[in-house]
Amino acid sequence: MTTFKLALATAVTAAALLVAPLAQALTFKIATLSPDGSAWVKVLRQAAAEIERQTAGRVTFKFYPGGVMGDDKTVLRKIHVGQLHGAVITAGGLTQHYTDIQLYNLPMVFGSNEEVDYVRARMDPVLLAGLRANGFVAFGITEVGFAYAMAKKEFSSVADVRTQKVWVPDGDLGSARTLQAFEISPIPLSIADVLAGLQTGLIGGVAVPPVGAIALQWHTHLKHVLDLPLLYVYGLFTLSERQYSKVDQADQKIMSTEFTKAVNTVDADARRDHLRAISALKSQGLNWAPAPAAEVAEWQAYADRASVKMVEDGFVSEDLYVSLLQHLAELRDGAR
Image 1: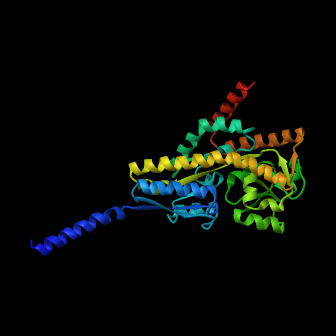
Image 2: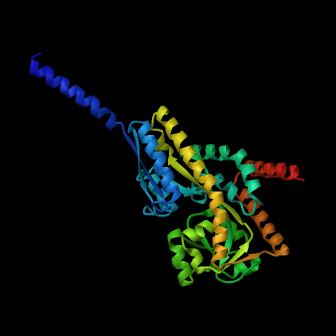
Image 3: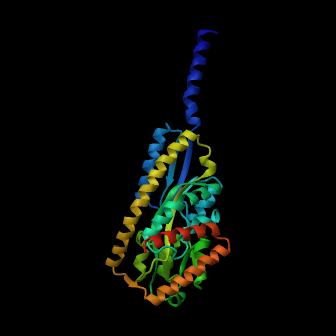
């Protein structure tokens, strides 16, 4: 081989070695409704930067914050076709793929944060394993907080709420069925359309955690809140199993470690944010009214029937529902 050919071969080999790692780089496109600069987006970007550093650029991320990719329903469709590879998404949005992920969403199943923490410590791994078996990898569950009924007109009883035009997230079958069990006919809208719906009178009430009401500015068109936690609301940062499986195991371990830390940070902060948001709503003049004892019992009776109905219809697995009730009984009995 001539000196020229040897030099050329060496240059080609060196170039191939430099290009090979780049060819193996895998990009995850992630959508979230959270605005750029929010705690969620900041924490995820930090975790992503650390993953990129530790994997030497083999795994990279591109984020689409602020709902630019659409609501949960639209984002899941884009994940299905490979246009996106992950999202920060509500549990309700994932029910079309794994119905048991809504287990904690059963109405009025929890009476306190202590009960939430006790059950989650024992059942989160079960739900995450079930979600993965259905095509999504999640790194933990993130609390949003208890949802309260909020409306333009004063109310307290179930009958009062039936006279309101109540919003339900479009595509969230679990929430729709829950309202129907209360004999409330919901109006499905995407989250992006709720503010306009409140402004125009298309809807007159929502069930939402205080932090969500403030972040989305819905509270500016609401006047009354029933001081009765109706639903425990939570979300997940999840990736497509199809895309995640393309990452080698060593890099998967790095991703799991960093994203689990990120999710745990958001989850811990959410409890404090929830309490601050309640104070903020009260200070801004919303009428935070306690529910009379008789009406609390009525709400609870409807909630229990709704949960049983969802189990009977197969929207929540009976064995998981029984496990949840057993854990609650353990805690409540121990507290006596």
